[in-house]
View 1 (cartoon, rainbow over the protein chains, first blue to last red):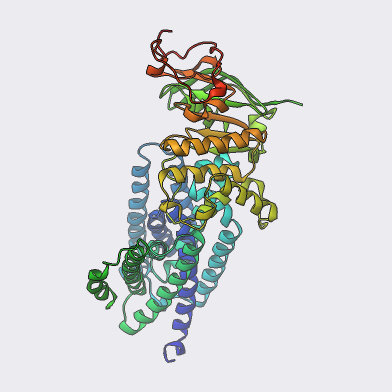
View 2 (cartoon, one colour):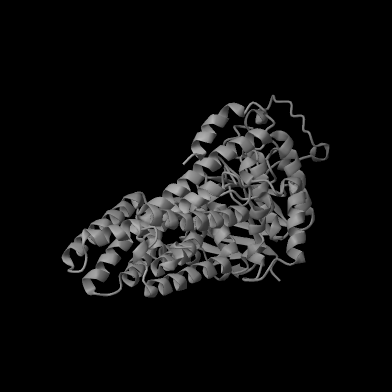
Amino acid sequence: MTVLSYDFMQRALVAALLVGLAAPAVGTFLVQRRLALMGDGIGHVALTGVALGFLLGVAPLITAMFAAVAGAVAIELIRARGRTGGDVALALLFYGGIAGGVLLIGLSSGGTSGTLLSYLFGSLTSVSPGDLTVIAVLAGAVLVLLAGFGREMFAVCHDEEYARASGLPVRALTLMLAATAALTVTVAMRVVGLLLVSALMVVPVATAQQLTRSFRTTLLASLGLGVAVSVAGVLVAFQADVAPGASIVVLALGGFAVAVGMGALLRRRRSGDASGLEEDPALAAEREP
Amino acid sequence: MNPRVIDLTRGEVVLDGRRILRGVDLVVEAGETVALLGPNGSGKTTLVRAIVGLHKLSGGSLFLFGVPAGRFRDWWRIGYVPQRVTAASGVPATVREVVRSGRLPRMRRFHRAGPAAEAALARALDAVGLAERARDSVADLSGGQQQRVLIARALAGEPDLLVLDEPLAGVDLDRQESFAEILGAMAAAGTTVLLVAHELGPLEPLVDRAVTLSAGRVAAVGLPPPASGHHAHPDHDHVHPHADRAQVPPILAPPPWAGPP
C-alpha cells in the first residue's frame, strides 16, 4: 500500500487508532453522566496551553496537557458546586481558553494562524515521533484507568447521589474522569483537532446507543466505531488533502445517520408493526456518500 | 451491643440558608419498620438524605449502627432507594447492570463478582419480579418497573437497613400490593426499614411505628394513622381491608392535618 510508505502516515494511522479507542471510551462515561459537552470545554482551554507552549518554546503537547487537566478539574469543581451561574462560569472559561490561545499565539514568534488551524482541526503531517510516544503513553493511561475503575465509574456516572450514599469516593472518581477526559483531549488534539475532539468522544457513543440495550455493548461498539472512523478518516484526509478532523467527524456523523435509520427500523420490527417500508428511500439516501 | 440502627438527636439541616430540619430526634431499632409521614416540605426527604450521608448535619448528632456518622464506613449496610422519576441515564444500561451497581459497596476493588454476588443479584431481581427483564434496557421499562429496578439495586447489596424515599410514588395500586409483599419479606428476614411516604396505603400493616414531621420537627410519633383526609371524618364508615388490623390502637397523637377527631 502506497499510503503506508510514508512515515508520517504510519504515525498518523497509529495515532488515529489510539485516539479512536481513547475518545469514545471516555465519551461513553461523559455521555452517561450527561456531560457530553465537557470535551468541548476542555478543548477550548487546551488551546491556551498549546499557545503557551509556542510562547515558551516548550512542546505544545505537554503544555496543552497541563492546561487541559487544569481546565477539566476547574470545570468539574464548578459543576460540583452546582450554584446557579455555574454554566455562565463554564462559558467564561471556554471563551477565555479560545481568546487566550489566539492572543498568546499572536505574541509568540513561532506560531502562525496556519499552526493554529492545525491544532484546531488536526493535521496528518504534524504527528512527530516524539508526539506519538506521548500519545501512546497517555492513551494507554486513559484506557488502563477506565478499565480499572470501570465499575465505580459506571455507578457514579449513572447515579451520582446513589454512588455517594453507597460510600464511593465520588469526588475522587469524578475528578479522575475529568482528568482522563483532559488527557484524551491532548491525545486527540493532533489527529482530530481541539474543536472536533469532543465529536469523537460523543458521536460514536450516540451512534452505538441507537442499536444497543446495555452499557457494556454500547461501550464496546463505540470503541469499534471510534477506531473505524478515525482510521478511515485519516485515509480519506490523505486522499482528499483535507484536515483529518473534518473527514473523521463527517464519517462519524454519516455512521450516526445510518444507525438512527437502522434503530428506527429495528424498533418498528420489534414492536411488530410491518408498515415500515415507506422509510426505505430516505434510508437509502442517507447511506449514499 | 447497640441495637439502635439509627440514632439521631436534635438533628438540624440547613440548605441554601434555610433551616429544613429543626432539631429532629429519631431512633430506629434493629428489625423495626418505621414510616416517615408528613406533608410536602415537612423535611421527610431531607431527613433520610441526611441519614444516608447526602446532607451534612449543621447541628445535633447522628449514630449509624452505633458509630458516629462522620466515622461510619460500612455504607454497604445501608440500601438507599432515592426518589426518582427514572432509573435511566445518558447511555443505555440493562436492568442487570443497574442492579449490579448496588452490589459495588460490598465488592473489593479490582475483584470480579463472586458467586455470592451473583446469587444476591438474582435474588434481588427475583424479589422485584424483574428477573425476566434483566437484559432489557431500563429506559424501555415503565415508571413503576424503573422504581422496582432502584429497589432491586438497594437489595443487591443485602443491606441491614433499607431506606426508601417515597417508594410508592407513581406506582399503581396492584404494584403497591406486590411492593408491600417484597418489603414484608425483607422485614420478616430481619432487615430494618425506614421509609418516607405520603400515604401508607398497602404498606400500613407492615409499619411498626410512624413518625410524622411538620415544618422540620417531629409532630407525632406512634402507630401509623389508619387513614387521613376524608377517611378520618367521624361519619366515615371505615372498612379496613386488613382484618387482622381491625383493632388498631389509637395513635398517640393525630397528624396536624388530620382534622378534629
